[in-house]
Each structure stands twice: as C-alpha cells, then as structure tokens.
Image 1 (tube, rainbow, N blue to C red):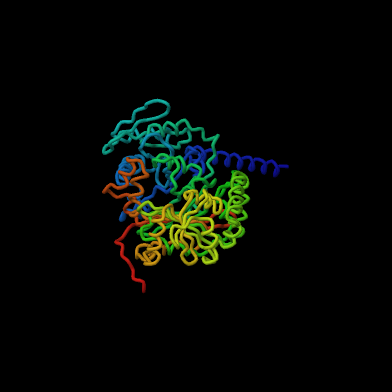
Image 2 (cartoon, rainbow, N blue to C red):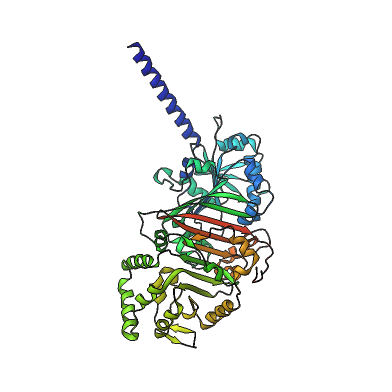
Length: 523
C-alpha cells in the first residue's frame, strides 16, 4: 500500500511537471507550428530561417538574397537586424529563433512583408517593453495593440505587435500589421507545415500556398489573370521546400501536397502520370521569355482523365464541336489527334511576346491530312484552324491561349501560334537551330534541374524584360528594371513538378546571371 501511494505521488508529480513544461513551451511560442499559426492564412509565400550568424554569413558574399528581395528591402532588414536582433540587451531573446517572412495580399502598389518570430528568456516585461528599454529610438503605442518604431537609418516607420504568448510580428505596412494584430489564430490553423526532422536539416524553408497565388499576381500584374504561371495558381495545393546552398543559385526541393478535398484542377491530371525525361526543352527558341512544359508517361490515360474532368463542365460544348467537325469534314478529330499524341507539349512566350505551342506527336505525316482537312491552308505548310477553341478541348486549359491558331508540322512536332508569321518564325528557328539549349548559360542552368518532370515552368529574366514591361504594373516594373540588385541579376528560374504518389515532388531553382555565349553545334 505504501509503495502504491508513493507511485501515485511520483506519477502525479511527473504529470504536473509535464503540464508546466508544455505550458511554458506554449507561452514562449517556441514551437514553429504555433508561430506559423499566428501568420494570417492568406499568405501566398512564407520563408523560414533560423536567426543565427551562420545563416547570414552564408549569403554575405553574393547577391542571392539581395537579388531576390531588392537592395532597398535588404538594407531595411539589415537595419532591423542590427537594432533589434543584434542589440546586446535583446539578442538573448532572439538568438537561434525561427524567423518567418510572409507575403500577403495588400492594397496599393507596394509589396511589403510580414515578419513573425517568437522570443524566450526570463523576463517579466513584454518584448515590446524590452525593445523600448534597450533602444534609443522611440516606440509609440498607436492603439489596437500596434506600436510604431522609428529606427535610425529607416525612411519609414516599422510597426510591431505582440501576442500574449510572446509571438511578435512586424511590418512596414500598417494595414498588414493591423491584420496580424487582429488575426484569430485559433480559428485558422496553418496547413503549411514541415516535420521536425526536415526542418532541422534545412538551411531555410519556403512554404507556398498555391490557392493564394492569384491574389499576389493580381497585385503585381496589370491583368487580373495573366497567363504566366496560370495553371499553378489554380491548383489546390501547398508546398514545403527546403533550401540547398550553392554560391550562385537558390535551390529548393520538397513536396507539393494536393488538397484532395477541393475540386481538381488541370495540374491534378499530371500527378496521375509517371515523370519522364524532358526533351522539348531542347527546342525552345533562343528568344524564349518563359515556358511551361507538360509531360505524360501514358497519353491515353491522360486523355481519358482530361475527358472525364471536362465532362463535369464543358462536355456538351466539346461534343458539339467534335460533331460539327465530323459532319463538315468527315474527320473524327478527337480520335485521330489523340491516337497520335506524344508525351510532351509546351506553351512558350518569347521576348517579342509571341505565343507558341509545341506538341509532340508520334507521326507527323499521319497527322498532316487531318490538320489540313479542318483548316484553311495559307501555304503548302501553314494553315489556320477553321474551328474555335479546338486546342483547348483537345489538350486542356493550358491551350486556352489559342482560339483559331495557325499551325505547321515540323517532323513529329505540331507547332501552333496566333499568326502565320509566328509559325514561320519558329520554322526558321528550328531550321537554323536557334535554340536556347545552344547557349552556355542555359546548359549550365539546366544542369541544376531534374531531367524528369511532369510540369516544368521556366523563365529567362533577360528575355522576359519586355514582357514584364507590358504586363507588370508600372511601380513593380520600375523596381524590376532598376540598376540596383534585383531579379534582373538572375539568369533564370525553374519550377518543376514531379509526380509522386498522386502528389508532386517539387524543385525550385533560381540561378544568378553570367555572361552568355553561344556554343557551337559540335559542343
């Protein structure tokens, strides 16, 4: 009986210690998941890194981060780090803590970030009080739990708010900090999470909420729904990608998890395929600004899945068009085209703002009579479709850019464009081998990528300059083409989706630019 009582007392003590431990852990905001839950869930992108010297030293000798964020925002963060994170009276509270930088939809033409972190350490004062006591610059309470901080060297105020669990958020945007201060994290649990093991092995982590990308693009671009990255913005998914360091490139990889409770999108279809080696990238013209390449291991299965997906919304319109083509030309275009469909197709935008599609087929000679029968031939090799929206119905959403396109068949590739001149221009590119893959910089960049994928987006920032001038809002284009370090200091970027158990393994790479040169055909 005595031993039983002692056992019960020890068990109770252990439970009590455990409860106190987790209460203290919760109150300190030490768990990354809890800190992330305090970030408003309309964030499209969140970057996580540990506030430790080794991280900053890693990027001190290059423009990787400065090029990504821009010099002005990098300088602002340096001032905040020096005056807050490195302050002798404050450093103990912030050392080795995860810091989160997130992007959210904002009004106006300024893209500001939200900075979120937690603090530890023995102190009865709030972190705001500690900051106020340790800094010469004043901190003013402006109401609703928001404080205005004017640091030496900053040209605009920085706003702070603190949670009762010592989770602190800051932003140069007053509206964004107000949103963070009023955010009820208990009603919105953040799904952008990573395992402790993955987090401990990562230099930094990039979280992407695909469903929030449309709002970010709407803020950056003149058009509400630009075609750049459109398929990605419609996919119900989120990603957690770990950073691998290279001195001249940012390389992230990890998983994109598709939300199976949401209606499927076009990109869901490719998650049902196996990744294959990409070849169409070798045929992109040297003038390519950006492209998206789709790859399927089983074209027949893809067509079946596409048809079933389309049946939910556009079946009648699609079948009406197919029947009309059959009655007027005798061609069963659905059967004949899909029977010859190959494994890859790409959508390309050039620096001259041309739109091209390259579709691999198994036999170009067999496809040619079907194409000529449904088209108006303007020359022996070039024709224009007689029917609206046919590429969209045959290959899906990515081809909505081509209503009644012109076409040419080059060997086993069907090439589409919105004018005869664009088709002929690509024929000249193909004949003279004026491909991006003939440049040294592209091959060095391509060497960083996976040779297999199902969906691959690529952008060449130099070639995209004129496209950005047309499509970006003036304030953002001016920032892009500024002489200070920025995106233009990067050669290119790639975002690859590689099917894995009905989700996607994901590679994201950005490489700094170097002097471009054309390799010879022998190379």
